[in-house]
Image (tube, rainbow, N blue to C red; front, side, top):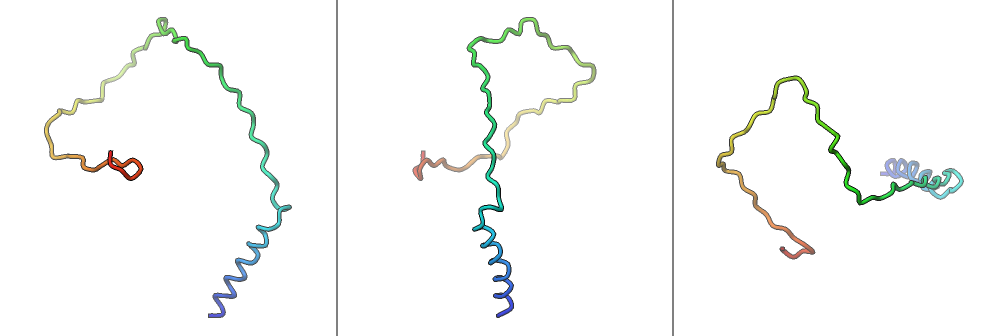
Length: 83
C-alpha cells in the first residue's frame, strides 16, 4: 500500500509544482492579423470558359433503382422536446 502512494506522490508533486511556476512557459504570441478579402455582389462571368474533354473511357455505371428493405427510424429533439 505504501509503494503505490509513494510512486503517485513522486509523480504528482513535481507536476503540480511545475504548473505553479510561470517563468518556465513563455506567453503565446499574438495571432497574425488576417486581411479580409473585399466583398462583391458581382456574379462571375464564365462565358469565355470552356471545359476541355478528357481522353478515356467512362467508368461510372448506373445503379438501377428498385425497392428494398431499408428504412430510417428515429426522432429529432430540440431542447429535449420532439419536433
